[in-house]
Image (cartoon, rainbow, N blue to C red):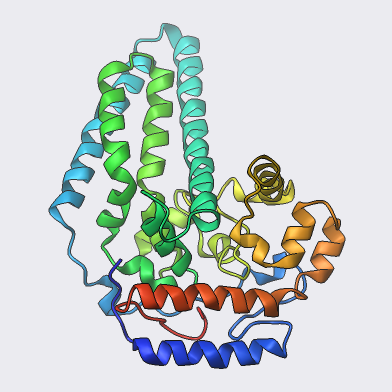
Length: 329
């Protein structure tokens, strides 16, 4: 991933050493605004979005993907609307419309939940040399250190990262599905996944447009507050990024910790979130939720060392990358 560099490679590595020294004598890592408990960490600010971040032109592939989504979306919307209009009588129309609307909501929530599994997996398990997904996972994990890396491409091209998969699926469903309920679910699900990385981009925009603010206000895309919780070390919460609607229930039920424990028991593999010892102990059931909250800071200095080891390796593998500012380090 090519990132506009405002920070040179050599100085970036030098700052890692000074940051590690500071972390060794502190419960919190440099630049963090940690407060007791996860809830109080949602106000974290990102490095500022500059005009240069917005200067990227959309590629032909991005426009082609958007066109594919438009065709598939139109076919699915036509099927859903035709089903409502074909219903018999006011009651039939109302029932069909409600079923279509409910199916669309479920489809969009399904897309949000799916984004969480994708994000969780890429953040925690692949290595840089893992076949197929290694490079992508490397960039996902680097993004924690440089929040503005998501602006390495235009909004349409960001959407196109997942859209390369969802556009043909949407067209295929549009041609094959005859049920208005299934069409509505398919439209919402593919559209939500198409917006995944675009929503992520808007959640990091410190100078959002009125359109972006409106999309966030009506929970079409994820709010900055919802996503900011994920960007607080140790980056182990709020994984869903379409609109973040699933995050509250997933966090309240400690879903990701339970999933980590299950994967560990089956495969023996530890997620990267377990570089933070209290998170590991809570996931394994060795401490309860209150003890986890109380001990949250205690493992942060050691986590900082491990996180900086990753960043050092990333900068060596990608000399053109940068660290935008101390808030993200």
